[in-house]
Picture 1: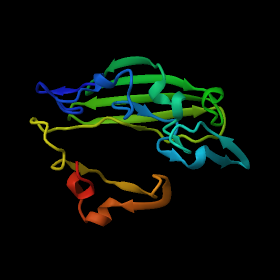
Picture 2: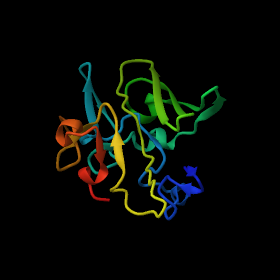
Picture 3: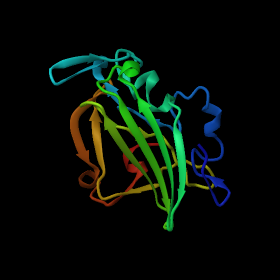
Length: 195
């Protein structure tokens, strides 16, 4: 994935280009992730009294939908030019027979870029039965023209939650409201981590 703004590649900066990792993409640069983003402990879960065993692709755990996740799918796509925005709509199907989650899912991922230079992603899923669906996207931005570290970038949102991970990188169930932690509506990345 590449995104240029004023001749500056703002996705991964100018030094590291995403297409270097096109065939072997361990960090899933630029990819949509799912059907379930993050790790599922011991690669199994229970739903409606039934236990589901998933692929172990991260040690003993299941990560990001496994080898049949969204990042490994081919998508049909459509580009729509609308009055104040452009949409790129991607569609694919996740099959239970492939990933061992319950139910098949018709997935639609819509990237929207509007006249105010705002970019958003909308996810829609229609499942054949109750299932897990928690997608994300692994696009990494560096808005600095000199490709410096991203510590000076700020995040601004009405809702900024962070799920707490244990020492195995499994979600504990605890959620931190970053607005409460930092008492600010615009949080600097250097307050959260060091790049």
